[in-house]
Length: 163
Image (cartoon, rainbow, N blue to C red; front, side, top):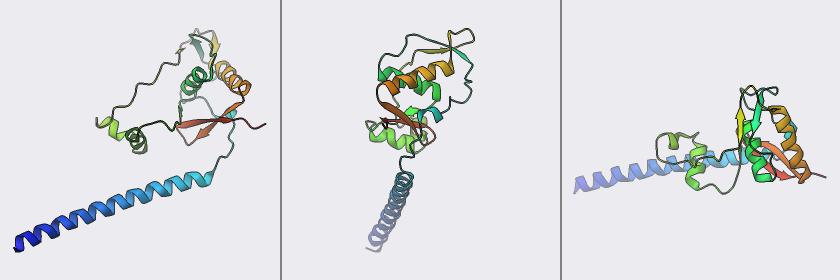
């Protein structure tokens, strides 16, 4: 009988330890969420989002076709700035993987979707520079009444432009 009681108390300790860990992780997630929400929407303009690291404004690129819709323009802008569009349609496992810094996908627990091709080729003899393409995409956003803002260090968000 004592062994059963000892096993049950050991199981209870493990359960309590797991519960405490889960509560700590939940608390950290809540603090992170409110810290991000407290920053609010600083109204960062799309002009302040720099090109991605390793891409200079004068570097020549070739684009397969000029962007004609917002979805295609977002792919190009994402490729130029090195940021991903922050969407609310990601599965929970993908959001958890992003929160852990990609560790779950690197360990093989989560399979990340393959990003679509933006149609940009970076090479020395392209027709346009990276700055020209970025400027034309930003103009397309303004024409459609949209603004792109930075959301953290790795993401961007599209919002209605202020009039």
